[in-house]
Amino acid sequence: MLKICAIAGAGMALSLSAAAAEPCMKVTLTGTQGGPPLFNGQAGAGTLVQYGDETNGCGAVKLQFDTGRGTNMRLSQMKVPVGKLDAIFFTHMHSDHTEGLHDILQLRWHFNSGGPKVDVVCSDDAKSPLGHTLSCSRYVTHIGDSLIESGEIAQRLAENKKRLPGGPADLVNIMTFSPGGDPMGVWQKGDVTVSAIGSKHIPGHASYRVDTPAGSVVVGGDAGNDKPAPPRPSSTSEQVEKLAQGADVLVHSTIHPVMGPDKESGFPPPIYFRQSNASDLGALSKRAGVKNLMLTHLIPPMGAARQGPFPIPGGALDEASYKDAVAGGGYEGNTIVGTDLATITLPAKN
Ligand SMILES: [Zn+2]
Image (cartoon, rainbow, N blue to C red; front, side):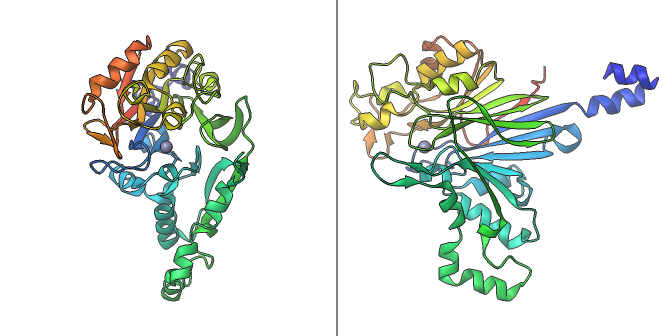
């Protein structure tokens, strides 16, 4: 900024306008519910990452990572119209991370059929060892099928012929990639680059990193360690750790150690072990030099007496329960125990 002033030989006016155009980014949790259960109106998993400068509210570029139940409602609270999303990224095909896409794309088709298309970025089809296939591209391609079958699409087309004839899937530009063990570029616009790495949870799971001149954020999704059960050095993903080196923000799903099989919850051990627990995420964040750890997709939710059918040993957890678990992993950075619409703005304002 000072350099610009010196070259231009300009005074205070230019200095102020240059200052107003400093880059900034915002990371917002659009939903923090862990897994399929409902609790107290929390939306399903999702993270909105926006980048720009103060003239556009840090929002020139808008990226949505996962679209759990109710994502549309949270976006409306953020005053982010679905027609303004540049791209949607999926970590994996579990419904608690995807089911809001139907709502988002139908709304976009309804009012924004003139375009632009929205990029949907996700893994190639992934074959499960059990025989079935996890397919983001088929999920997206068929997103409007139930509305076509019900007659809704035909009805709306009859009312407005400018809408795209194939329904909401016509508005999507699907960009699939084959996630590997090292970060790979999967999306880019201006100064914003998104890279991805393959990680373990269910087949096709990927974690993402957004880099901008204002800062960086990693969205780990539900990643866990490659080894599905102990003995292992950590419940966290080595690939996420690689991706998160020096990141300003790590957004990660978590499970509290109180749900572990050594306690009394009855929570199924394989489901417990495929998530990263809060203490191990604290240790990962310390090792990787992460400045802010945003816990999301909390299992169990704060204040809940049960996770689905499973009781919480010792009763409902609160913010301190999660912060204590993170601190137990040795993390001394800023921990945010996620609630819907929790936001971090970068660079941090002093
Ligand atoms: Zn999940």
